[in-house]
Length: 352
Image 1: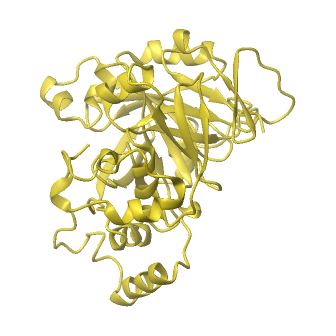
Image 2: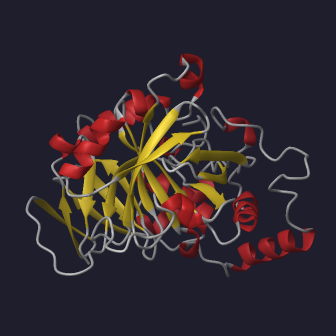
């Protein structure tokens, strides 16, 4: 993460009641603080900043000043991404954890390929790895290279707002930088081409903040391997309930999320088994997790991969549910955990 805005810029002794003071102390995002990112909002007609009329930008500013817009509605999860060295290994491990998945094809970047577990709400869990014959120079330039080469597991997440341009403008007014639109695509195994556009939010692509996405071709063509929800479903899980983001300093991370999404202070708790102090913004899927110990798995992960998703939680379950394994109680909800040793990363299940 870029220096000058990271959560470490706020001291850890700040109490929840002083979050607004913490927010005021935080340096604001500026374009030159983004790592490996395009120049933000250059003067071209397709730019996110220029796509909206001046009157809309003015109304957004008024809404910010009056606190009339809330951020929970912006977290319509499109998909979450799990990265590793070998796609077949990722597929096998996820299947053994009880989540069926299917090969989704190669990306048009000629670097990566993916498999997916689709859910009835139109979201999906993506497994991504480097193509066997990918050019080393292109691999080296990929924003998720270290996650794939390091078998990181959880890597990134994306949201699909009703209006990408309006959401980009809202974030920009909130002093959160948004990148230019990037065209993406892949060819499904059945030969169907799917295309979409994305925009980076903040200094990493889907790490601390989710990146923005909008479809060019029909959404179902991309979200489901066959182009439509399967009749009997791939899984009993209906969607992605929680995205758990590893952060160094919980108070500062909270302040940044409140700056970006205009949301109320979160609920907090400690999970000693998970090894983290947790903060959950009600009405959103966002859980921030700061390590309890400098020698924990979460601290090691932060050192290797920075502030990014460290776990995903699926839910709720459609129908009756029984599951063995480790169990947590997060914010009043039971969370069952797959065996992280066998899966290679942290995947939870929230039945209700």
